[in-house]
Amino acid sequence: MKPARDAAYLARVRRLQCRAPGCQRTAHHAHHSTVGRGMGQKASDYDAFGMCHDHHYQFHSGTGAFAGWDRNRRREWQLEQVSATQLTLGHEQCK
Ligand SMILES: [Zn+2]
Ligand SMILES: [Zn+2]
Picture 1 (cartoon, rainbow, N blue to C red):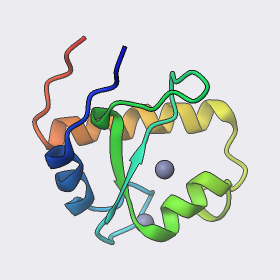
Picture 2: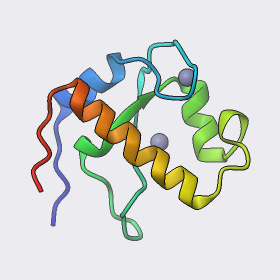
Picture 3: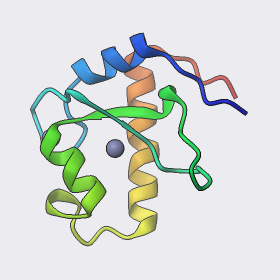
Picture 4: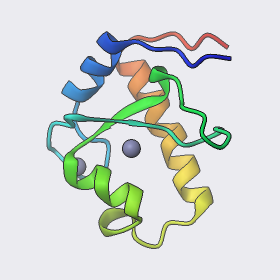
């Protein structure tokens, strides 16, 4: 199955506020959720949410605001951010 691509949706995601706890900055980065993805498989663009440059880096490196988060916490948090973003942008989940 090919993941959905929607450049316009991603552009809107980047204009939202960073989803990291307490961050007020504009995201500018669209992070694709790593939940439920097989090796080398890219997530759908509708599984993306916004983070600022610093928090995006911290999430991937498990540092800063995300230091000490285990797999499960990272998973749950990403699912929440994807849902909140889809709700904000009015995207209907199609599954
Ligand atoms: Zn990312
Ligand atoms: Zn941030």
